[in-house]
Structures are given as structure tokens and as C-alpha cells.
Length: 420
Image 1 (cartoon, rainbow, N blue to C red):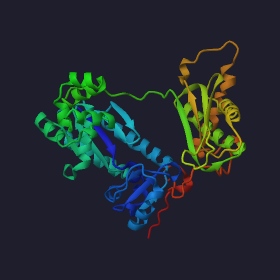
Image 2: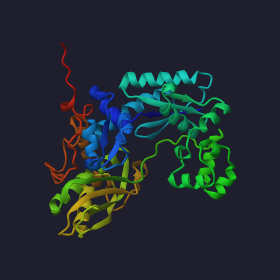
Image 3: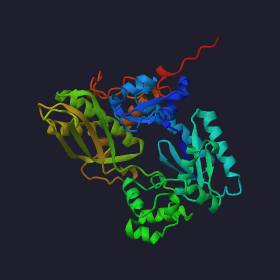
Image 4: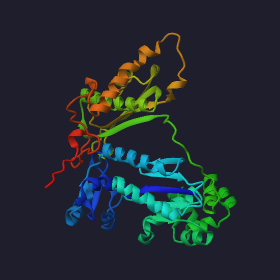
């Protein structure tokens, strides 16, 4: 048996933890640069707000219904995600963190327990510890657990937990699930399956998986078997990333090289920190810049460059020097740059590093200095110590006019409670 635990409207729920006034109110969370809607409360969904919709087109609706609008606070969401994942790992020794707000638990060996009560206990513990509401789906395969989770959210009478027990119950539930809600069935496959007369999860489950493989692909055929209760997808344990990207849209267009260098240096520095966090070395770096895709100006420009490092490295200084050479090479005057980014490529684990006869790896990577920098920033706050080229005022940063405080990661933002 598998359990999929999903935090409900995660970004909105994180905001509500520290602002109880938001309970029962329509709430929206926006993407970087306050562009599009990336999270909605149930109340906002009922008002017709669509995921991904540009917020500037929704201003009248926001004012009419007094909707609370927040800028993304990824520091807060990331820290809350770490907390809830650590808490949930107590309930099974075998797990897969599927996304920032979803985790699969392997419940093998728990079959003799009352899994519905176990799921309800998990919900209580998470809400008691973090004030985050979660939905839980339990089933004999990952795909069925995912569908059970969907049903747990859709039907309030289930009290946030849905368990698939026997085939009769499974078939009854699958008949209520549109084909587009099945895990692994995207928009394109959904349309093709509908053309084949398959419009519900039950119809897909009772179809011939050999036919589905022939007309679609092997992955979808495995999904059919999963719907039949035959496990084809095991838990995937976290693997180090092969590439690390950091990119942002600017709060205002950049036209000067110096400001663009600051932005690229800032992104490269953050990418280097993430590289060290997963104990990897990068072989090369890609730097890219682009103008606005939505500008009416005819002056459009997009370019990128990939440069190798002298040797695999996680040293911020080496990565910065290479990134700055890259931005110098692709910068062109006369354009208004709206976005830039860096990507560390071909990452390898530190323990698999190959020695080089002509380069002293310790001198190049300077692990003592990098460790000291990371320790200071962890203890005293993000970017408490940084390289000057990354800038200080950073007038180009993404707009975030309604960002909430970093309640859990910054001492200056910690809540103050007054007792009467």
C-alpha cells in the first residue's frame, strides 16, 4: 500500500499559518515579479480565478471581492516544506518526496493496521505541529493513491482521507474521476483517449493495456496496470540534480552592462550555494539573457553562452569569474533586458572527482573558505556575506510588493506576541 500526502493549496496555507485573518477569505499568491496567479484558496477558486492568469487582467475582480493578494515568498514556502516533509517521514521509513508539497509513503507492513485511522492521525499531527491542512490518498499503487488523494480533496465527507480497499469500491470511485485527472495522463493524451471513447479513469482501467501501449506508449500502458491494482512504479528516492538553474525576471528593464553583471553574479552565486548543498561539482556554466517577450518594441534579443570551468568546481569565485566572462560576451547595447539566468551543467558527486595532474583541486575550490561563507550565511541569514559584484541595493530585483515576512528564517521577521 502507498499513501500520497499533499498539502492543500500549499502557498496559501503557508500564508494562513502566520495570518489567521486569512481563514475563510479568498487569497491569491503570485509568481515571481508579481505576474501570474500560482496559488489560490478554495474561496478564490469559487470566484473564478484561474491558475496562471495574469493578475493585471484580474484587478477589477480582486477589488470587487476584496481578495487578499500576496507575492511569492519562496524562503517561507521552502522552509515550511522542509518542516512538513521531516514530520511526515516519521510515519514510514520508506518515502519519496515528490514535490514541494507532496510525499509518497510506502505502507508495506502496515496492512494489518486501520489505515483510514492512521491517515487521520497523520492529518491531525501535521495540523497540530504546523497548522497545515493536508489530504491523504491510500491505495495499492502510486497511481491509485494519487486518485484517492484527488477524491479526498473533492469530497468533504471523506474528511481529507480516502483509502481504496476492495475492487468494487475502487471501480465505483474511478467512475467519478475524469480521464484528465489520472496521474500521468496529460492534456494531449487525454484528448486522444477521449477520441478512443475513454473518458473516465474506470474506462481506462478496464481497457486493454496492450492496445494502449500500441496506440499510445508504454508509460500509459503501465498506468492502466496501476489502475488495475498492479504496482508498476516503485518509490524513487531523491537523486542529486544534474543541472542547477537560477533565473529571474527583473522588476524593471536593465539597459546597463554593470547592472546586468550584478544580476548574473547574484544568480551564479546562489547556484554555487545550491551546488555545495548537494555535495556536487559543476563542469561548466550557461549564461543567458533576453528581452521581454511581451514588449511592443521591435528590438528583441535573446542569447546564451556555455563556458567550461578549468576543472570541476563548486567555488563561488571561479563560478562568478566564468559567469561574468559569459555575460560580457553576449551583452549588446541598445536593448532592454527583462530576464537573465545561469545554469550549472554536468554536475558530478564530489566523491567521484577525478584528480588532475596540473591543477590543485583544493587550491582551485578552496573548500575551507566556501564552508566558512556557507556557515556564516546559515547562522546569520541568507547572503549576510557575499561578493561585492553581486550588488547591494539591487534595484533590478523582481517586484514583490506584497511579500509576507520570512517568519521562520529571519530573526528580524519573527512574530512578536503580546500577552494581556
